Amino acid sequence: MVDRIPILKMGKYLLLSIQVDMHDQLAMDLQEDLTDQIVRHRAKGVLIDISSLEIVDSFIGRMLSHIANVSRILDAKVIVVGMQPAVAITLVELGLSLEGIATALNIEKGMRWLEASLSEDDEPREHERDDTDAPAEAGN
Image (tube, rainbow, N blue to C red):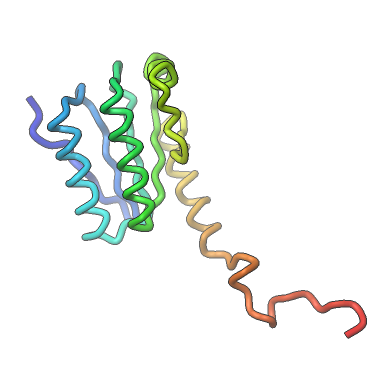
């Protein structure tokens, strides 16, 4: 039995690949380990590969949602990749839409999404611009 799920640091991102069926204690340990790693490495993104998960229950679905919410509070974006169709169907049947969690078909697409979403964050938003960025109004 696996004691911990390894979390790999890849630049400003963390990658974890769930290769085993998760039991409740393993999920709780993962949640704790991941939040510690986000803070320690000041990670800007977390990619969770669940391509090996064949079944999920409501606890695992809630745990994924909780990890995403905590990560966002710690200023890290989260994307779940590799979801099997049966897992997606089960989550919907359980009423767990994983709202607010980005998904992608594979790790490569997930990494591209993280890169793109972080580059968007570097651009100033409308309310963050100062007056020198604002377009001149007609008649001034």
